[in-house]
Amino acid sequence: MEQEEVAARQDADPQLMFRIERPVYDESFIRSKLLNRKENSTTLRERCSSKRAKAAALSFLPILTWLPSYPVKQYLFSDVVSGLSTGVVQLPQGLAYAMLAAVPPVYGLYSSFYPVLLYTFFGTSRHISVGTFAVISLMIGGVAVREAPDSMFYVLPANGSNMSAVLDVEARDARRVQVAVVLTTLVGIIQIVLGLLRFGFVAIYLTEPLVRGFTTAAAVHVVVSQLKYLLGVKTPRFSGPLSAIYSVIEVLGHITSTNITTLILGLVCLVFLYVVKDLNERFKKKLPIPIPGEIIVVIVSTGISYGLSLAEDYKVDVVGKIPTGLLPPAAPEFSLLPSLITDSFAVAIVGFSMGISLAKIFALKHGYSVDGNQELIALGLCNFISSFFKTFTITCSMSRSLVQESTGGKTQIAGLLASLVVLLVVVAIGFVFQPLPQTALAAIIMVNLLGMFKQFRDIPTLWRTSKIELAIWLVAFVASVLLGLDYGLLVAISFAILTVIYRTQSPKTATLGHVPGTGLYCDVDEYEEAAEYEGIKIFHSNSSIYFCNSDLYLNALKEKVILSTVCVCGPGTAHVKSVFFSSFKMFSLTSPPLLLMTLQTGVNPEHLQAA
Image (cartoon, rainbow, N blue to C red; front, top):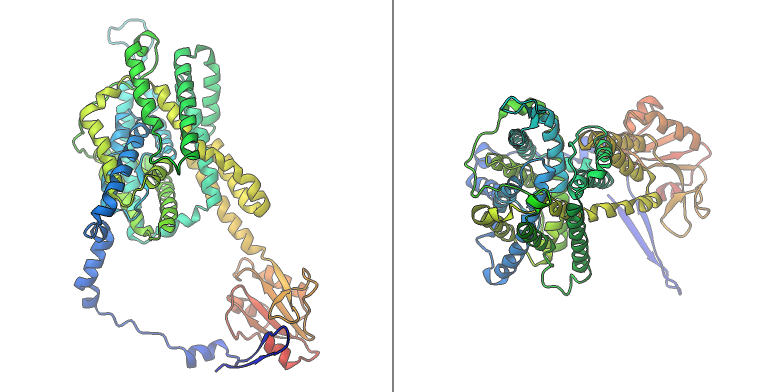
């Protein structure tokens, strides 16, 4: 029972003074006398009730919770404008990111339709735009190139002449599509299983500095991979450790064979897109919808390419054949599964981490919540089901999500309409974009990475705030650039876990003293106002105690105080008790650990109560 006596001073500067008296309990008394655990009395019939079944159905299909009460008059117009605006951006990005995934451009359109349609039914975020994304596309492309390199598809001419072997592009692309589809199937299965097992928390292991360093490195890889398209040179695509360096060396080695027409067109597209992006950012509050720079570039460059016959007369590489219509569903080539398991885990975790982080930002801004486990299931279903229709792995895109949110999108209906825009192109007018120059797509990709390169600004900020966080950022960046995105991510996660162990093994310890006239207790070595009570030592550690740091904890304790009669409080102190003194008694739980010690010199009881 707690008794409180409150006395107020009635002088010029009145302050309330509190005196608290409370009994001291040990752990055995608390467990045996004060607290009794509740018994779980839920029956099997209650667990399988219709109410629970309905809740499970609504959780699995979130569309059932918001669509019946959808306010048509208030939301529909905003969703239509947002959906059309997002679809116009999604179309060129789908074509461009297919190049990163090392598959023909039409598969980027498929990946911009099926998953977006499915997310409308299973997703919980109202504002993110799922579909192709540069980082994931690059990871997919790295795996596809590794499993189906150009060297596997050189064939001798059919006429038996002495000509050198030629690359069978059609067979190579077909094999890479198979690899990308099987990888997407496996990613979907992993995400679904993790979601069903309630593993939505796994994204916390990808800390913000790790993700930002990793995505900055991915942006470097993307830019390097697009240099050959911007210059119009023919170089092989590399994967694995040092692939970025090898790619740069190859491009520089072929710099003299640059296609000037391709370079000029690419640079014009780059400058135009940069200016449009800057205008959209500066006048976003005045513009009703962002200027659709990507679709303007696609339409104009396609028209110029067709009108001037750039592919035939100037040897400019173009997108090429885009088949009209959708492909029938087909089972993936499951024989490829064993060699893709490790890659699928990396892609699954990175894809979910990107999606949930952006979803939480928009949910916090607009006052609703997202379910991490359901998001895992939603992304898993989008990837798994869509893979039977020849798509590659998707997640949410930051640039498209910002367009969808800034143009007034209210619900997942905006994403549904964006997917229908892509469907219209695939079914009806896909052939129009066959003359589209690849250098224009490279420009679209590069300009969309500007936001990632701005993450270099994190370095001075982290230097001032946390050297350990800065080390995580730098390790993630350097490892991912040099070793590739898959091994780089593994190294970055391992290093981040080591920093956690380091922080818990090297906690900050202090002897606390009372600040006169307040109820504050501060480090006596750091603040001159803090003074210790005679005969009392208060030892503080900022980390919980466990087997890895117990010895360090005891050494720090010996350095700070000379023990006589000791009362201990804090999680994990039972372990210290067994190592140090058998007379320790735990009377309350605090975190971080706190030791309150009385010395043989005698103690003022009032001071002990106050402490």
